[in-house]
Length: 121
Image (tube, rainbow, N blue to C red; front, side, top):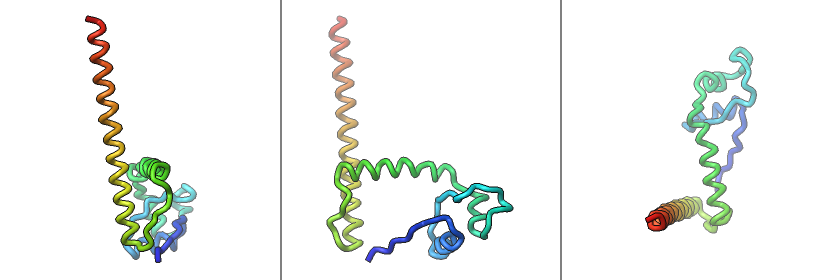
């Protein structure tokens, strides 16, 4: 059974994540002054919020959305272990797909530049 945890900005959720060793990169719900921020773990996050790491989230979400569009949004596996393997396969296929498209675009650019060069001479 897959354990689903909804992550909301509450002190109890921050405390639970700290106990299990997870690293939450979630902005505080209200960015108020430190004196108005309640809770030990929320204050700790207020002091050292990892902006660079959080800003990478949009890139990851974009790739997830592209994979879902390309390969569907359902996994066929039932067990968590095989679901993870299936996701790794999907990730690898997506990377191969992107690499092939990159190579094709480079080759098209090369061929176009040769045509222009031959046309001028």
